[in-house]
Image (cartoon, rainbow, N blue to C red; front, side):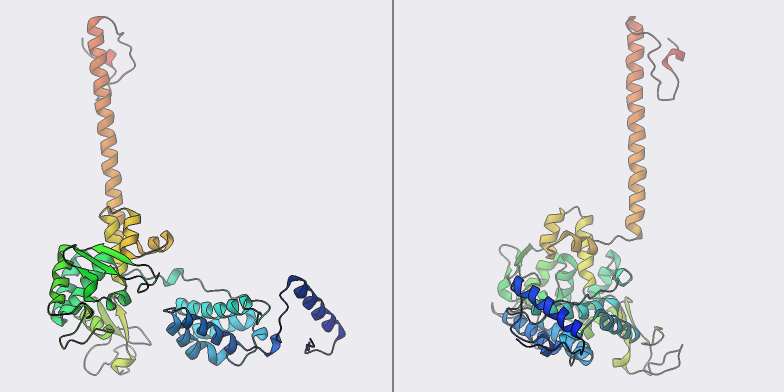
Length: 398
């Protein structure tokens, strides 16, 4: 097979020949020309594989490629992509205001395309460029719902509709994802057995899940079932239409409850009023241009994990309820707050008090035993035991 080195130097040709001979010995020599394969081609192959296997993230992959990756890497040959190109992409995306986690998900999609191309038969690329991800430790969400906020949010949800009140309660108690709730059908509810289930394949980890309903969840779910058939959606609006998304309703509800606000996209200051004028930068914005800052529905998942741990539920059982497969991910959601740290200090003080009381009780018991032995003449006074006040038994009156 003839292949161009894209160089006029004989040493470059010899070097490439040695590489190809090594690949031939390993059985990885390609039947196609690496230099003709573009990044767009290997991403298209990955997208086809995602669709064939029913991957739920195929939409995310397509959006990341179409909106951000394709304008930069689409026309490039796969062999031309280097770490320097990736580093420049990261710097440009951060300069545009993208979050570190967002950039990392885009880079993960690019890496996945290269890995799939390497593992193809025959392989379409010889190697995967080193793609370093950004540090996300300063990008971790820490929002959760306090017990006092629950009642206020529940009241606001009830004003919006039974469907939002039900979705909020299930998310708060069991920590189920929004996409999982929207797939619930009436047949997934068993009032006689008091269970609520998710079918295998409808969850992020593709595994089914069954939980026993609390009293509040049962009442709301039973009301949502009224007049519906088994295949009807559990969460429906007043007109009977299934709920597909409710980001706007959730934000409005949180803002009314005082747990969210719309802020200026430039300075981050809260913007309110009909004219939506930012008092800090003096600009007037459209509602679609403002940025929401506050409680997210996914924060209920974090809240459920923390509440289950506080209630003393065994970690393995809690993971089955919330649908976490790995302990590391579960621990990331089990976030402590100031009250947890304060309670830890109170627990330490209580333990110290119990230890002190136990020590005093033991000392008093030994002191009584020593005194009783002395009265019988079988224990010497110098027994080396002090009483509860710290005085040696030898100094006590007979």
